[in-house]
Image (cartoon, rainbow, N blue to C red; front, side, top):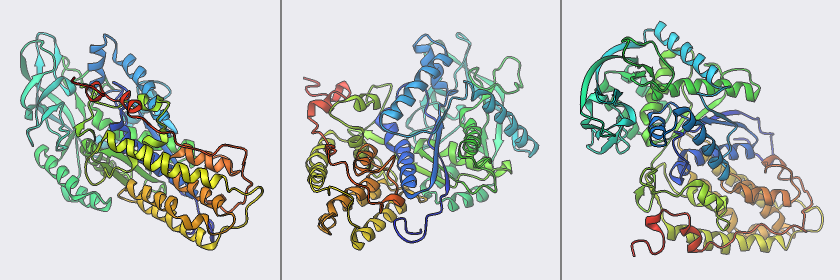
Length: 544
């Protein structure tokens, strides 16, 4: 990578980042935020610091069966539920400074028409290439309610690992399977006994195993996820579901008159990706779909382990058969983030809601982001522990970094500063490169990006490097902190006379500081402040 602060000018590159479409059946919690959404935002912010041109495009997975479950529980309609929670999801992302350039709701205009057109075009092309198959399968049906017990309406145990499951996939081992493969199947609601009906469903043929696996190797996909894909393909015969017996969704041609057929959401993410690529072409001004074979846009998706099969098979695999689409350049996979050792759960109310912690007057979005970013979710699951959070908020940030910022602020020059010492620029350049290696790579490592920031913060030699060392330490801090703590970074940058967001190319511009402004600071977080954000079972005095 060319030097960012000195030497040749950086040549900007286009990036498209697509974090997962959140299911609009409830608000977001920190288990959602801590992996794919924070990852995509940190990557995009670092790229902007570097001078590149990233766009983040995501949306609502509106046609998931869990939306119909929520509509049943709330005595509402799926469309109303999707719209209501879609707005909440956008608010949750904004509250924790997760930047989104376009949020697509496929059931609402202006997105519905383009999405349904893309569905029709993609299926037509795949049919022409012999990739759409009709298969007979057995699906549970409840005669008493007239309900097809599919998707989230079906419970049982995973045929691979035996864990309890909902729908056709397992969150424990990432397996996906046919409804008839579910062990001990039962309906969510006690509406009467199940019968098994034989229906015709649409499936997509996927590439030969070796071809797909070679693509995954080229993407740097870890062996454990490639093995998950191999098991899926061996069990389901190189196919992935395209249609499901459900009424809520984009309707597809129905082989049987009395059986509804709609686009299966895990197949729909392929069309969603193509639509995101087209939207990128419009917003970026390139005029081409980011997934066009000749596109020079770097495309990145971030996902949890539960979306390995939909992403690596339904998107990457299908793109190889589509013939006019390059796969994602990077698929960044995170393990689950837990709360006190247990899985975050919307249904069990075991969660810290993004809106609650963002609304706390004592807990800034920066503190939450810094704490989440230190979790190494690329390598293994991690857990939000309250004692660790309070230590980080108070000792590391309020008493540590906050005090160093205040001390440096008192030493800011009255006018434009002198040039930084060469060693200061060299250290900053190396740490920015370290963040690039952590974030702009086939494997993301947010703790490594935080470590680069921490090293700069702890290096007292920078502030002592010259009379104006405090100025340049603060300015370097803003560049390295922006991916992690954007509010702090912008306050420091603008307090030093900069405009907008921190940019490496503007680092050496010696703008006079606004010494009349107060130094940015971190407030201390008390146990009671965090307690107000915790689920009832974890609050002080719970169980007494």
